[in-house]
Image (cartoon, rainbow over all chains, first blue to last red; front, side, top):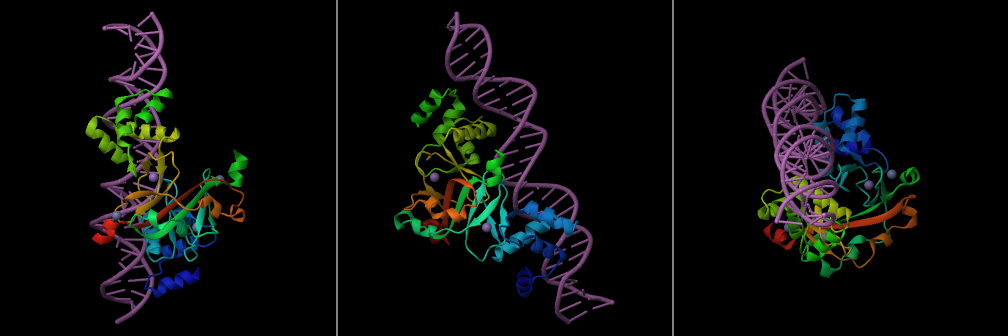
Length: 139
Length: 139
DNA sequence: GTCTTGACTTGGACATAGTCCAATATAGGA
DNA sequence: TCCTATATTGGACTATGTCCAAGTCAAGAC
Ligand SMILES: [Mn+2]
Ligand SMILES: [Mn+2]
Ligand SMILES: [Zn+2]
Ligand SMILES: [Zn+2]
């Protein structure tokens, strides 16, 4: 994730302790934390970090395209560092766990011209819902 | 929508004035109102209707499968009376307007077995984002 | 038509997710 | 080391949704 920090420095970002720990928290595969989860994990390394800074930083990283904001059900938004490889999501309806998935067909191709109603369509999100192995076993 | 009221009566529902106006508000095509919008429209006919009754009734109609709850961005959930014909959504990023769309391919088929991670997958939601004709012109 | 009763409605308190702001602190250049 | 634009902070505030005890009423029984 020092790649990320370098890119941010190149864009004129001040590298504060808060931004550094947030970037560290958002490192890894299949990472999809809520803002509060990011705050809790960041606070283990930097106890005085505020919720406001977490929201500020997440919003800026989204605006820069370095992370993706994912909304599934009506719960809290989740933040996904896998922003440079387009993908879709598989969500557990039991525990909320989320996995990245790659589709075999481009979902944009499934929307025929006659169903576009004059819209300039630019994006598509596909979300699969089910129960993860743990939740199937536990139920 | 008297079909709906009849089905509800058959299921032992008390037909109160509140439930009747909510059912009327939720009649039509491409209807996707938030709970607050349903409340505002219902209150035009029945001024004393409470937010709690709107939330109660919407929740019950969802549980009965008579309407569908739709979450797109991180804003308020929307309620869709088009529950008996599976469909997906096209959302305007400008004004939030939402249209029903029919796809030419089953999105469930696009998720290969190797990408299911042992989940019991049961549902899929596809949401297209863009700008509606009004918002393209207005911008 | 009246009575009865369990289901329904209501206002308001509460919960959660997120935004905003004025005061304070600090990264990084001079 | 100093300066200052930028970042951080705690807390107030907004939006959305849930919950509850008290009051109301739909509809079946008579
Ligand atoms: Mn992801
Ligand atoms: Mn719809
Ligand atoms: Zn699970
Ligand atoms: Zn629009």
